[in-house]
Image 1: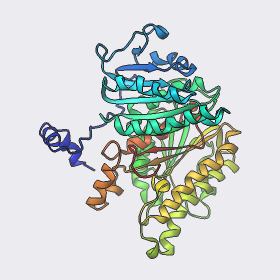
Image 2: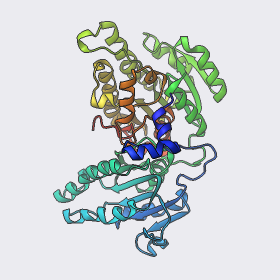
Image 3: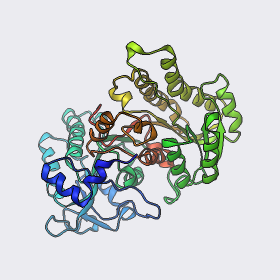
Image 4: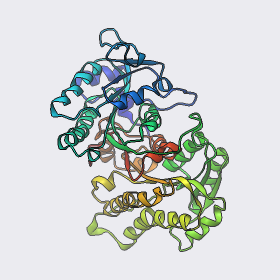
Length: 451
């Protein structure tokens, strides 16, 4: 779907007119392109005095060859200044050492000059320790305050940039490379204002050019849109893909499977024998399970029919639970596997005319949170990705006024692309992403809806 305002605002004439009238001027976001080798193409500035900065410094050369610090010579790196330094593409700040209220000003002292030197589509990651990991009341309060800071900074940064907060658990320091590769690269283009928690994980990526090599992935609802983008991205990262959709999508499914070197499976996931048929289709099991299949049947609750309600609950919520349980009971979801559920910001914030859809997507988040401890005993992670307004055939059918509101009501002033959701799924699917489980990642451009 073409965003005409975004195209106009980035044209020569549009930039002048938008600036003169004081209208929003969203930038085209940078996204991962084939042939790219480094997560960060430009300068990275590392700040903060905690042990997480030291852990991050060990992987910086794998991210970019232009690394700087505020203090000359720290970690053997040169000093960056707003007056003489290059434009910054990425900022990493270790806030774990902030334990007293008066220390919070260090956030301003680091970011204020750095913000003046940002380039296009910059990435910011703040590293910290989870508030619940300390018994010190003030320290816990200070670490929790970082959530308000990063979310506010995400709304101020502009230039197509984004800001994230990562709470790093004890023993999870060696997982920083994976999370920084994702959050500091264009793969996280439409992700901002998010808070993630890292725990220790024995699994690691061996080859960052093909992080999913040797893995088999099942994607439901894979024939088009976000599902097709997920399948393409998983295949790009080295996974063998099995694509599932309804029998009516057979032709599109087979065409995509052939192009990706995978295979298609047609099953009505709401049928009574769906679990049994899935087991038959996956004799060798899977390492990655992506529940993307979903439908909408929108009506206000006063006008909601039984048919509309039950159809949405059965496809969006019941089917993921039934199919996952079938794979678990049948021994077909491998140890150290990865399960990703596609939720929605509607499940977080609610939406007019979508009580059924919002209930189903909130329930999906509940599945991830409840299942995480049990699956974790086998090294299996389970997480939810919650897209916001994504440019698809479904959103193209939304009335113009509502469609424009959906596009603009976020910090980036535009809709996301199916690729943005797919990149988040692919990151959750990586071996090292077992460090993250039971969590929800919003891919919504920091939507103004919800928390």
